[in-house]
Length: 623
Image (tube, rainbow, N blue to C red; front, side, top):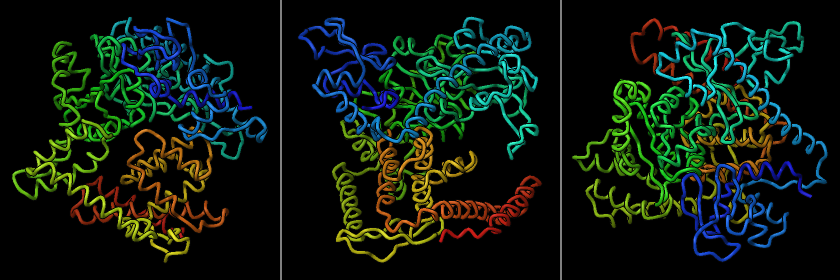
């Protein structure tokens, strides 16, 4: 028997539209998809697939179900075979009911905790809404931003009072651990377990509260905005068992109807942008949660619409955010999907632009949004002088990784032609050159099977053996420190779980592809807990947008001669210390070479010297 809890987790991971779409030709019909029913003969489509509910239904013959049931009824698979088929696609291992009882109990406890946390967060949302009604200052603030009571109610806006323990009036036990697990209450002190020394206080104080909902409408977290000029301006819930900001989109639950009516999703950068745009008739707006747009964000949006418009400020930060969004969208840009980029004047965000110029003017800006292909060209041509052969060659070099992220299809062919034209060379010459260099790279890799990353730009740390094709040993190559850190932390996920949020952020900020790998590692461990290395790499490689990680994952799989189990955690910690030391020393070098320092820069230099001494106190060598 397969545990029921696992089936529910599996259904949350797979997309019923993708499963059904392998067998039925589906076309977009608002927020749903429609096709001819595969279970009875019909000439007019009455078979509906709902990405929101993750179900299918036929209004002709009445069949209804989820992804598992579809495989069972359409392909005559047994229930276990259907589950195993979907689990294989999702990169999940199917547990059996006769497996470790303790493991089953832990999984059941985790599911129960997630359900309970959603209830706690919903109760907090009710409390914050009541506090908003009772606080004229907060109501006036929202009115001053042009919001009506109707739109505030639609998004469930609330207010967290100034006091340190406001939630004590909403919950019977302020010391309930669930308040901490839900990210509502912070505990300080009492590290040795002495509760008498602990200090508890509300995470959100004197802030307008924006409940973050799952697609199904469950409250899974909050964003809070200060009413005055305090810092931080926005404060999000921390990562919890029910909330991962790298996967969720603010306003998606509320936007479902408008996505169908307007035909596209408008991705902005802030909660207030979403609410203000909804107030002005753009209910199809959603926002990332203080993070760069990810492939998971884009995948989720494409479940509801075939068109996405990213809106960014026109300043340097907006251009950087657009670059990350482009990289996230490229692997998902099929021939039938539309991705565009809207850049507002540098002095505006969507909220201020709509309030100053009106909805019609903003609609006109959306109509002028740049298509993905043109944004790719702009990004590739950054810092290139296209009037010279050198500049055009550099542009094509910068374009190549972006182009290669595109899926096979006519759009990819069109982009290749446009790049060749922009680079002033025949399309066949460019295509042939890239094909030859790719083939040379493949031959080079086959000719040197022991190489795991070559020389390191970040310093080398340790040597790792890999298997040669003949089964013998090759000389131990030098792996880059980032490769080694990725391998060690993937090899020993409990060590990853012990890292602080700052350490996770530091690793996710490393150069690509390692930064993306560490971010994917965090999501995988957050979703599934500790995993064996093989299962972990399979999970990461099957995630949306993982094509850019393929080469790194293959290198990690090639590592041989793993250290003893009790030595991995120590080596992982040492590798991380070494990475931090290198980052500190690089910043120190930059400051020292910059000449005369401002007061702030001098203070930063002193802080870096202290960090350098602390990191050097424990030898950072990763063996």
